[in-house]
Amino acid sequence: MFEALVRLRRQLEPDGLMVAVQGARRDTWASGMARDMGSGMQVYVIRPGLPARPEGLVETLDDSPPDQMATVDEQQALLKHGGLNEGSSDKPRISLGARFAHAVTHFVTAAGRPWR
Image (cartoon, rainbow, N blue to C red; front, top):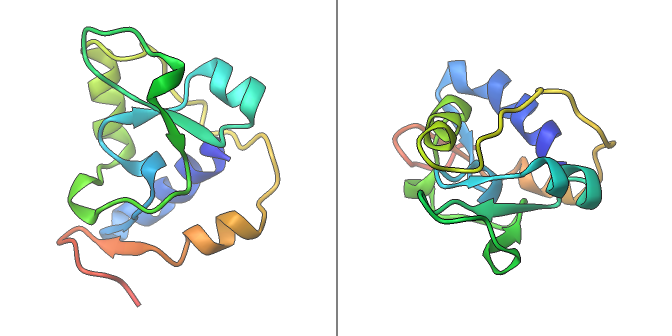
């Protein structure tokens, strides 16, 4: 799921659109294990300098405030500076389901206004 979200976001970002879900927050990322074992349905909240812990997992497609959104590149920059030390292959591993279809209705513009 996380990989498909990253791929969608990379297509939307050039137009200034963002998806307002937990997996698109500046401080979240799905570790390799979260992607492999949980299909990317949960992401870690990254706390620079601290190890990722199961208590720090949130649902990838849960709503998130627009002011916490970031581009994929901004998320990856945080990873390089003390996060999970991983990158994305941008390759989806699972098919899109109803929950993901719901998530794509949560677009926001770069200015934080809902997109309709």
